[in-house]
Structures are given as structure tokens and as C-alpha cells.
Image (cartoon, rainbow, N blue to C red; front, side, top):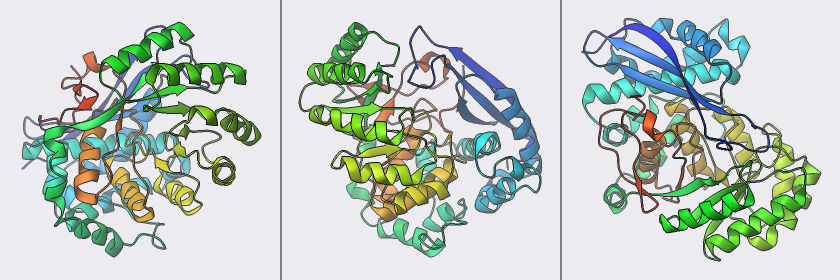
Length: 408
């Protein structure tokens, strides 16, 4: 038995080396986490993380403490057997809900709490998160989810059906546990890096075994974006996948014109091209720049917005992040939605790939999602107790109990 006896919070903040983590909008990042600690009547505790880039962490921690009060006294197995109910109750808190609803700091707080609950659950069973999820029945998985506001496209029966339809073929996909999950390098081309630094980083990435990498674009001068994009293409080679990340800085007309100007270097996707809540603009852009594909999700805050983007055919690559939506359970919900719409899930890794390295294994084995690749950002490896291990461009399967979220 592992009952939650106390909930505390903390802030972890890690300044980056010069130029690291920068993009067209976020020019002075401090990679940070608002952390939930679930203490129990045993030696085991749960750690939950949610990502920010410096400011607002104390406010999020205050919200965590308010939202999580109802969990004190809960035994973890009992809580997780109907976690979808607890999730909805916290998300729809009669007072805190006003601060969202289901977005902003209040939803980030919920994500941290949720991730801590899954961490405690996996540790209490002595298994890594991916193993916990794969050992659960389809009904147990669905019971951890809140499918509210999705009923017209994904019912409980539909979610169960997706999981059950892939049960008998799991063995065909389980070799991924031995082979490892492919990664892509997102640290070659931060926005404030010089051209020469980008060129050298591309060489290092290719030498390290990466066949996919991402460049930050969105400069006021379109010529700079085009020059750097071709620089990466030249260094990575014609067969490499090169993604371009705008971080929301373009207007729709600018997104259309610049995407077309970049088309000859064959971007694998254009990421976060414009304001992240503007479904119609993304729909228009997707039609205008086809066959170039759009990726988004880093700043999509909940399952309903993801549903809208999918319904509008405004997204091809779903970058749901369990430290942006309401945690692991809502990540799984969005992954089920994406499977329903036939779209690949390639998470944004605000967690630095610590939790998502587990979740992509579950997505591939349990839902049949393509094992495309997972973003890799190495900047915080030294701060995690069990950092993700990437060799030859491949994530090795984690073996330690939990979600890999504990800090040293």
C-alpha cells in the first residue's frame, strides 16, 4: 500500500550556455520545472515535472498545492484505477477552473500533478513507465483518461477499440524495446547561434548518427532563414530529414510566402508557423503550402484544441507534450485522437525526452503509431538522476522504475 500523505513542490532552474535554447520568440530562456512531490507512507515518492523557460514557476507551484489537496490520503492503486475521474475533478475545480479553463498555469499545474501520480504508480510497482502502461489492460488505460468534449469523434468505446485492435499484433512491434527508438537532434540550430556554429553542429550531429535535425527560423529577415536552411541541408545531405521551427513568429501571409520560398530545400515539416490557437490560419496555410507539412503542439494546451486542428486538417505531425497538456493521461488521449485521424505523434520534449521516451514506446506498441523519431535536447542531462541515453541517434529503452523525472 502506498498512500499519499503530503504534497510539496519545488522549482528547478537551469541557465543555458550562450545561445542555447533560443528561438525567434523566446530569446532569453532559463530551462525550468515546477515540480510536484507526492510523499507516501512508504519510502517511495512520486515526482512530477512541468516545463517553463524561467518565469512563473512559483505561481504554478501554488496552483499545484491548491489543486492537489484532494489527493492527500489516496492510495495510489485506488487513485489510478479511476484517475480519469480525479483528473476531471481537478481540471474542473469550481474556483481554479476560471483561471484556464484547461490552459495556462492552472493546466500546467495539473500536468505536474498528473505526471507525479504516474511516476508514483510506476515506482510502486517497481517498473519503468513504459512497462506499467503496456501491462495495463485497455480498460485500465481508458480509465485513466478524461474523454470529455471529444464524444463526437472519440468515445470510451472508440478508445477501447483502438487499443484492443492492436493487442494481438503487439509482438510485431515489441522489438523496438531492444532496438531503441530513433531520435532527431534539435540542438544544432538554435536561433542565436552563428552560421558557423550551426554548420559545425550539423557536422557533429551527422557524425553522432542523427539522420534528422531541426533548425530555428522566424527571422525578421527572410533571407537569413533561407540561407541557414540551405546551410543545414548542405551539411546534413539530401537524404536527411531537416525540420524548420518558426516558434509562432510568422503572420499567415508571412508564413505562406516564406514557406514557399523554403520549399526547394525540402523541409520535412514547418513547425509552429503562426499563432498557436489560430486553427483557421493553420488550415489555410496547410492548403496553400502543400505538400509541405505542418507540425504543431508545443503550445497547444489541451485535447479539444488538438481535436480541432485534426478536424480541420490543419496539422500533419502531432507534437503533443505531456508537460504542456494535462500530463501523461491527456498525452495518451491526444495520441488516441491522432490514431483515429491517422496522424503520427512526434512529441515536443519540454521534459528533455525523459518521460516521452517511455510514451513513444507505448504509442508504438499499444496503438501502432509509427516509430518515426523523438526530439533530443541534451542540455539538461547532468541534472537528471537517470538521464535519457541516446547512442548513434537512438534512444535506449530506460529500465529504472518510474518516469525518469527525478533530479540529482
